Amino acid sequence: MGGNVSTEQRVLDVVLSFAEVDTLPDLLRHTVESACDLIGAPYGALAVINGHKELTEFTAHHDGQVQITSGDPRSIGLADFLGAPIKVHDETFGNLFLSGKAEFTNQDRDILTALATAAGSAVEHLDRYEQTRKREVWLRAAAEVTTNLLMGTDGRDALYLVAKTARTTANADFAAVVLPDHTGDLVIEVTDGGTYDAEGMWVPKEGTVTYRVYESGQGECHAEGKVPAVPGPCAVVPLKVGKRTIGVLILSRSSTEPGFDDPDLIEAFAAQAALVLEFTRARGDTERLAVLEDRDRIARDLHDLVIQRLFGLGLGLQGLTGTSVRPQVSERISGFVEEVDRTIREIRRTIFSLQEPPAGGTSLRGQLLNVVHESARLLGFEPDVSLEGPLDTVVPDQVRPDLLATLREALTNVVRHARAKHVAVAVSVDRTVTSVELMVKDDGSGLPLADDSGGASHHAGGLANMAARARRHHGDCAVDSIPGAGVSITWFVPLVLQEARWR
Image 1 (tube, rainbow, N blue to C red):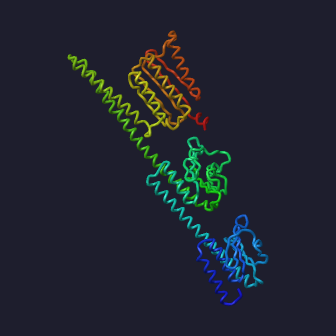
Image 2: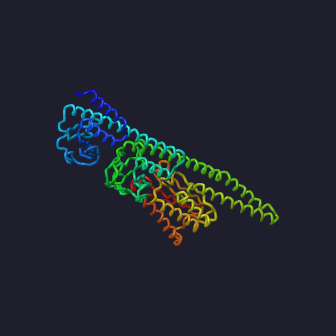
Image 3: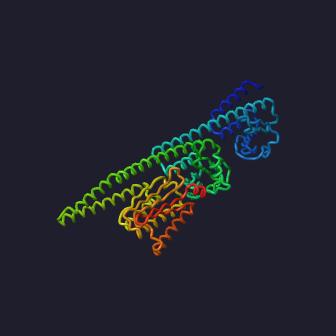
């Protein structure tokens, strides 16, 4: 570069001063002012170009005044000007222009080129600094979410925490966590910010960014109009655990706000949050399983030990009633036997409640036990009940009403006709999880003979209803009766066909 020492020193001082500027707008103004001052031009401008090569920002210098406008340098009378590109990462970030000087020399061109080069390096430095700052902010946010979730925040509170932290960290106006329901459809579980109450709404499958991101596992950023809650720029990223997508995180800003320029950082936060959410969910499942196993152990001990001992005690007391010649003693022993029977019934009800899920509700096991318990009042004794396999999780909802109705009708038939002293009920899912089977067996009088038209017709109607319910689900119903020795009803429905039919 030609010129005297003082000019070179001034240029060097300006270049060094760029490192002290910590915001992009200040750097742009400082670049224009310094160029005008060093070269002696009354007019200066810096046009910042976006990805579409359009002018997006214009900084002008005129008689010591700096202002922001937009348009082309010629729009303010810069007909003859000297220009130099500002490059960042080998791409043109903008153009620095000077005008108003009578004649631009080669030295002026060299000075402007040096300033543009230094400004490009400074912009690149600021960009790296801003990316580092944003990364630190998102890392702190991920650490905060992780700490809170591991400290015990779970359920919907955990989802709210993820949505709120993501929204505040991204300076967004709206955030939502979208998860699949039991049928696989996406549902907006929680939202934070905005005025649009979208919680509980289903996300349409056709033409929505949310479904596309969920199915592809690839995040997307859009300029506008993709999220009804806040129709501005949005970022939609997957909540991924390894290669599996468990949900979607949505962030959106108002239409006057800039777009999201850090999708990678948002995706990294979402992946960390998804991992911790999955961990806390697994931990909760483990704790619930431990409780259920403990309750199941208590129920087995009550059934196998306590009830059997009480039953033996009742039989022993009953045997003593015939050995006493004193009516008062026999009467008291009979009272003790009745008290033992009541205690056994109370323990059985306790066993039934222990086999319910911790939150109560309408599990299939609970519904089956309720049907059996209702029949006990009419039978005069408690049937033996066996429930085996993952009934609550694999038996489809559309099968359950027919299963319960068949059990209820079978027990009603025993009450009305069998005069049985013992009934066994067994409901099970086989080990291959391909079928559910109901068996009701009694030791009563068996089915009426053919010449007993009244009883036979009633039984035929009830058994026909049971068979029809089984065939509705591609199953079958078999009846085995021995006169004077009871009836065994086996009701069978395949699960594989149900899954394929309703998937």
